[in-house]
Length: 157
Image (cartoon, rainbow, N blue to C red):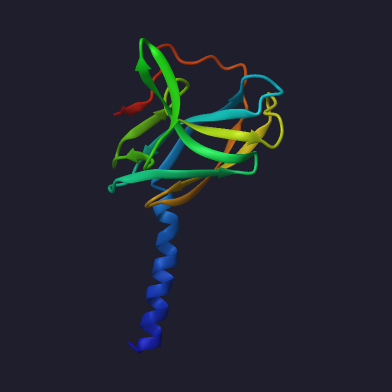
């Protein structure tokens, strides 16, 4: 096999393998919401499932629906007071596990909304993973949705 042919074959195999890595991440039950129609911020929630055999990490998110996007969680600051804070280092997603992003827990924070999050509309969010790369998700806006009873962020099997 000639060297140029091997190089071409290697590059082609690499390009073919890239979409397969993204296929290891499933995004289930996504929805976005804002507190009211004139809100300047909103949030997106979903369940992430790493169906692959390698650990991964959600490290960022991007959308045209907001000027700034961060991965956030809530932490208790004492006396039962919860404070929202940015997650440093992203959200770990071990192989074969799921991570629920829910109200009162981990979520994608949308700051400086570029338009209202109107009931029934959709936004496009790109989730960026260390291993899987970019995963584009169409997320419906559901401002009427109630939080799950006992909802909290975390891993589940």
